Length: 264
Image (cartoon, rainbow, N blue to C red; front, side, top):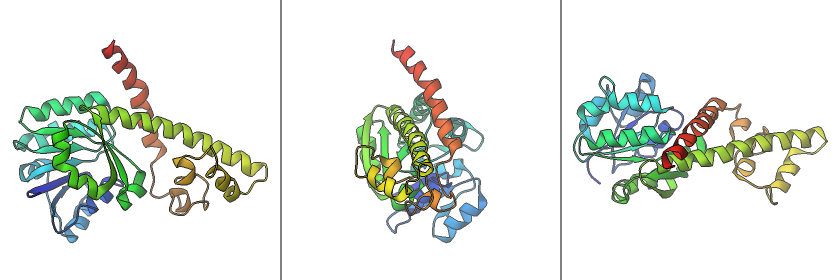
């Protein structure tokens, strides 16, 4: 388990995931465009880099967590990007939620440097990232997953091998589309119940002990005050924004028809 572990992208999700890697047995190295985030991690004992290229030159495992596929591709191929200094046998793990085609493209790029790539998007939200209870949906070689298993276990509780590179992204998109429909339905039902005189606490209790129970109802309920620790009970901070869900929906709607076409 020797060598430096790199983490790029210290936002709402990535920052919390990276903090779970701050153990005495891991030499964590980080990069982010946000200087305040870098200072925070430096104060916690991490090595900080001035560019993704600098980080890639030092690390044998590199995790990335960015908002979209364009950002991830730019991080790898842009000026002072990962590809400039990527070392042979490095394992690159992208935890961003992006389209399958970009994940496959990244894997092919990384292989030109005789390095390895896993797509490993996560489910569990900000709370899961903070509590290290995330589910990792991983696409790639099983031997590469084993190389990073101890790191996945520090950040999550479910590590699932979904298939070849790109399979993790498809699994995540399917899951998120189901979540989106659940959140919409739950919000409408809770609103209807309140307008018809029901106590939202009582309604939630019944749903969560009946056939309507789902992750949205028992963990991410949209009614403020019904469940502690949710964004709605904390002035809507932090949380998985509607903008990000719209992004995922767009990837799903645009990307999957292309996949069906490619597969005939």
